[in-house]
Length: 383
Image 1 (cartoon, rainbow, N blue to C red):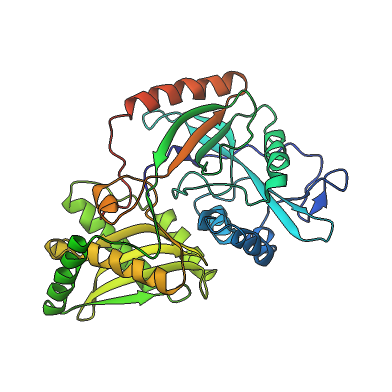
Image 2: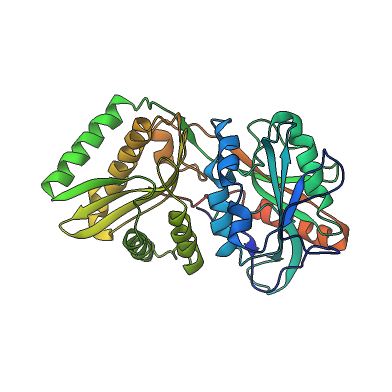
């Protein structure tokens, strides 16, 4: 989970509307979507089963594109920003597309308190969602993005970490690509090199001798104590490295909210390392029917030299294989350890749709940020 530009200090601008739509209403004709102005978590979760079924039609679909992430993010990190949710049904009444638009405030820089109104996808920004996309069947892709663009009015759009594996979305001609982010992924079952596999066996045996046990926690079994201890470990490890933790209080609340919607084969999962009764290592990730997305990891600095992180990742890979997943996603950041496991880089892209003076201010800011960050390493879920 890397740094992010969006901030929610201050009130985000509301959508222009003549009436409040707390219940789904159809825009115009039979081909237009049902739209709801989100006022509660239930407005996002009301279509959960259909939404997840639509995601399951695409094996590579990310957890970040699902209702659990969207609802948890909106109520915590997103601070209940003005948001619209739309759905399209086919002639038989089956859900075939979902889209959303969220009005947020973006800070111009870390040094300046100035913010500008923007529109983006629900769940983007703080919390570091990768592979963002609207779940939809191919024939609905253009109308989904047209609907999103129509929500902007005179407000610029910021689209970070777009999933472009099937090509860039059909954005308007004024859209500008401002950069990309590597997100290494690995097909399952994994083909880990024999030399690394041998090292992992050595590391695992060493942990056994040290009295450290590894435990898997599938979705629905990650309890608040694991999350609290994970936050502690993040703080300790980064303090030892002279760095600040990437997880702020609202991010921990985000994970706690996701656990409330996790069950069975989908949701927040963990792998933990215990020494006696004490947690000394935690790996967190998101499991779906076909994927596991490695979100973050933390361990006690006292066990740093025991390669706890490598063993936790190896266990998470095996857990994903046993659940029938076909892909292990390391998410953003091209750290060397990910490549050693056999991951191959996949690019997410960052786009803006500038509109008016505000849009060109953001464009200038993005140009400076892009060129300043070209030589900076991506600090994500490091081993």
